Every structure is written in C-alpha cells, then in structure tokens.
Length: 511
Image (tube, rainbow, N blue to C red; front, side, top):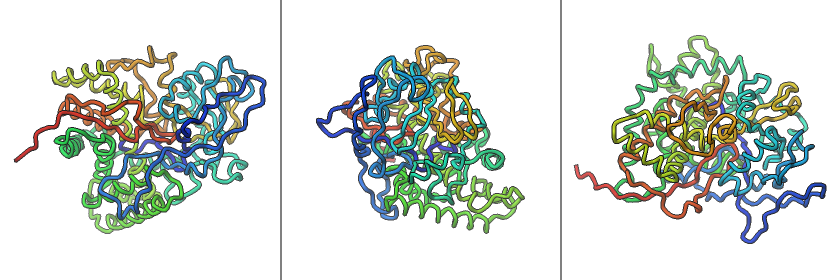
C-alpha cells in the first residue's frame, strides 16, 4: 500500500530462515513426552545478491526482499516447532504441530495458520530473531487485540530481560532519529501526528491523484509491453507506488530514481548492518532533512500542496512538530508506505493467474465497462493473500487475556492478519478466492486507531494496476513453473521476490 500503514513493517522485523540444504532431513516435533532434539542452526535467509552503494545502484533495484530484518547470520538458532495447544507451552497437542518459519512455511503459511486457529489460537512461540511473542490467529481475537489500547506500539513497554540479551528484533533499537512515527507511538502523540497527515489521504485528495496513478501505470507497462515478458515485481509493482508516494510527498521528479534505489536497497537487504543499507538510510535521511529545509525556506503563503509542505506548514502554525518528527514522518510515509502496495499488486496478480476462472470473470467485467467486480475483487485479494502477514509489534502494558490466554505485562503480541482473514468462523469457504465476495470486512488494513491511513490510495493503485494490466495484456500468464516462485523471507510482510510473466508483445508505438 502506498501510504502510511500503522501496521506496515517495523525496523528489525524478524526474518524467516532460508531453504534447507539439499538432502537435509526435515525435522518434525518430538513425540509427546520425549525430550526435544537439539535444534539445528538456522539456514541462511533467502539469498539476495549484495548490491552496490545506492549512489552507484542501477536504475531499478532487484525485486524487494524482506523488510528491515536482522541478518540471518545474526539470528539465533531456528525455533522449535509450535508448542502444544492450550496454555502456551503447557498444553498437549491433539495433532502434530506444523513447523513455523520454515522455507515451506514462507511459501504457503495457510495450513500452519489453520492448525494454530484450531489447536492454539493464541500461541506463544520463539521467533527466528530469538524473541518470544504471542501469535493471535482467530478473527475475533485479532480484532480485539488490534483495538485494545492496553497493547502499546511503544517498544519501551517490552520487558527488560529480552533487551538484556542483545539484539532482540524489537523495533526501535536502531536508527532512533527515524523511529518517532505513527508505527511506534501511542496516543496522544499518535493522535497528533496522524491528524497532521490524514488530510493528504482524504477521498477527495486521492480521487484528484487518480490521473497521475493512471499515467504512471501506463508508462511502466509501456516500458515492457513490447518485449513479451517481464518480471512484474521489478518492472511494475515496485516502481509504481514509489513514484506515486514521492509525488505526494513533494520529492522532485528528477530525484525520484534515487529514492527508488535507496528504498530497493533497504527492502532487498532489510535493516541489518550491511554497509549498503546503512549508507542508503543515511542518504535518505540526509536528503529528507535537506528537502524539508529547502521547502521551509521557499514556502510563502500557502505554498506547495504536497505532504511535506503540509507538515512544515502545520508545524509553523503551532502543531509542535519537531524537525526529527517531520523527517521521521516523511521517511515512514515513503518507505513503509509503498511496500504493501508492491505486495498487493504482486500477490493479487499471482492469485488471479492461479485462478483463471476468477481472472476471466474480472476481464469480462472490465470489458463491459463495469467496476463493481474490480472493487470487490481487490478487497477479496487483500483478504485471500494480503500484503501484510502479521501486524507490527504490540506490547502489553498490563496483564490481560486474549482468547483465554493470559498475556503478561511486557509480552510482545503479533496479530496474524493472514490467519484471521482465513478464519472459517468469520468467512464462508475462506480458502476459496471469490472476487464477488460480500460481507468482506477483512483485516488487511488493520483495525482500530492504527487502521491504515492510506487505504484509499492503496485501493486506487491496486484497482488501477490490475485493471490496466488485464486490459492491455489480456493473455498475461505465469512464465515457468509456479513451484519455482520465491517468496520473500520477512516475517511481517508477505510478497514475492519475483513474478516472471509472459504475454503477446504489443506493437511498438511509432508516433
């Protein structure tokens, strides 16, 4: 989603382990009552080639990788299979627990989530980063947790012993000057900052932006339509939202390719200590500070109508927005704001290509000039295989109960949006893709005060991208074996690293 999502990826999101070595056996859970086998070291995270410094990066980065996650080399041993159901680790399983955070899990987590919903709906587990957290998987419990103000977004509420162990994977441990933003704060600061940016995402403002989104969409499709093939992530889903949010922020168009390179570096390698990532963050932070300064100096009267100018104007009118807050807000709007839209487009196209009956329904509807199925279809794609797998960290400010489990003060809680949106207690035939599904109050954009602020813009971009692709490239299809598709390794986000497609090439425009 190309706009601020209060449940977008945090800095230091845990990373899943990579694929097992060839020929390595897959360990299952120990038999009930048996001593657990020693844990093997976590395999490498899904490989992503090292990239040059952002200043030397090519025009388009590699397909996005996991969001701000510790390097796999720094991760502790891989976690055991999920504990038994019931009171966290104390119950006894009625069936073997599926492994979490494996390579197979990254490819298709939904069977494991179904098991958790049935046997351990609120489940305490160790994440690949070493942090222990509660996973909330049922829809009703998820809505409760997302709206519960006793669950804070401020990592200061996390218990001290976890911090004493070193790098925990908890957000806020690094890049502190960029961390004062909507993702990491509670009311009243959250209310104040959200009010400042909400004006940029009203239905009227978003509707006015529609021609620019269509222009970007057509331009990107033009860049590969004559070739007969493309990597839809690299060539389309990634650049579309980054250019769009740059326009909304007020980043000059001559500078937007730099942002594309910096953002690609950070997503591809996550938030680990790799030199290229650190340099990209530093360059982006420096650029934003300079841009804010230039805009502050040039503002006269109402000035520009972009989001950064609006933040400056609000600060000058007594809203008490500090320079760090302004830079952090711009950073999170740019970085966290676009990644979910990359996944919405990528996952959405993938789902349609794997469900030809639904794809044909949508193409026929578009050919008839109807938009209703497109609108409900994007909502269904968000529910069926959404861009955000887990809502970002929450921390219990006091002891509380979720789904019958006692959560201690300081415990981290992760709401599994992907599991909640496949809950059969809430959705009929939840594992079926139905673009005309009604009563589809999914949690893909969160719930409560941290509901995705940019949902209207994300819907616009998703609808525009899908409609234009299916209309201009009507025979688009997956290239190669679907089993060879590689999913990114981050825990919070769910998205493909690449999406190779083929189609009948369009004739070159000679005009």
